[in-house]
Image (cartoon, rainbow, N blue to C red; front, side, top):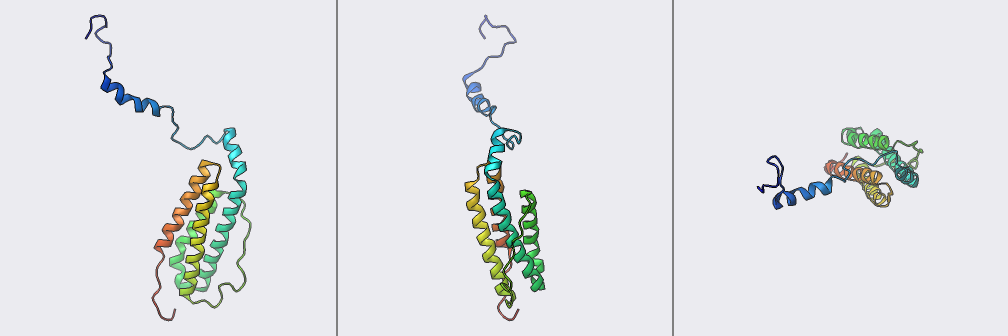
Length: 169
């Protein structure tokens, strides 16, 4: 140690400096959610209000189809319960007054369990793709992440749906 430095002075070696640079760069980064009081967040929320309403209406429509199939095909109730719970949770996350979408009368009438489950799969897949597409258009990063998470959740629930065996159902 050079004599000009006091004994308790810390010297930085090249290795210490190189190791510390990434931590110094990250010190200015924010890792949590956006500050909900900032003007930028308020503008993003205003810009995304229509997007949120569109997603909420689509989720409500598919949720009503799931409820209708559950009511008509009691044997599918256990398999469809996680979908119904997921849709309720997604609507709660969006926290918007939901406009009531209604399914066409007779749209599901006369379907056996297999074709009703196929209808559910089709509607859920459309919803999953639609939400994923809308996530890419969100102005708010928080909303984009939430929509992407919703889309992934739907995909996971779709993968867990049972296959019905052939025969009368």
